[in-house]
Image (cartoon, rainbow, N blue to C red):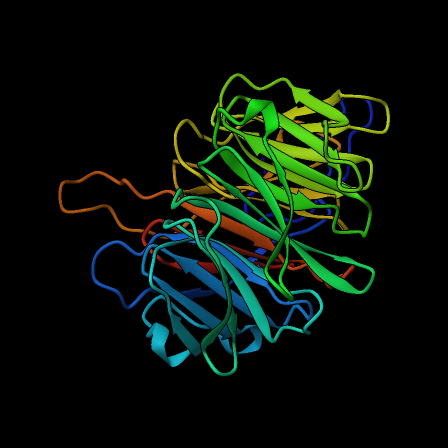
Length: 351
């Protein structure tokens, strides 16, 4: 296990010891100005990788410019670095930038079961759909199809809904596993393929071809508790996270083959975040012990672990946990990781 101050090591091929290619170091911290809980439920970079958005319990979408955050310290006021702030009517669980509008519009899923898109510059809603019967939405995502955006949302109502944000029309409703369990995660293939990955509270992940959604083409059955995340590493590989305390790497090109199981983090009840950096082959997960764990897809043991710099509460216990993580995807040679805590604090690491 390699700390943030360690130098990269080389791989011992005889003993199969992980090689650490990226020496992540602390770059910035942004403290929440809110009083009370301000857990960060979502962190998303815009398509350029220059703008960062966060959302969560505080009912606010905060927009930051990455360059303005680098070098900030815990004593700095968050308001000094927020480029804009959009107040929302409900707590937020998920954010996603519209891929067809160059970072001008961001979509959100909230605890009231509503998907809302906001014009970031004007700070006003431009689209809204309430089709999940008031049940909490855990995840939203977009893909481009024929040059236009297609959205998806997953909810406590047990459905995945796909819709056209241009007119709000419902494209499809999918009920993985019969629709009896909450949908925790939805993600389209970010490389432009036709697949949709779904994480479900029935302990399974499902992979659909969006051209024919009658049945999943794969059921990823290997976790023993709720699958909170399903993320594409590439068009043939998916990473899932679960409250059973493990991450799994699946080869879907050769069926439902588990290539590797990642362990080390703590996760038994909360959404702790999961993100993959496809250029570097790295996976990051939060943890309920308030640490960030980075895994190389080639090995099951973490290659980097860092605790966030929180303080214990007045009762002497630390109830904080990492609630969201996100890799910046735009660079092949520059690695940027953002982690958010249940106390609303953001920390940025880079290599």
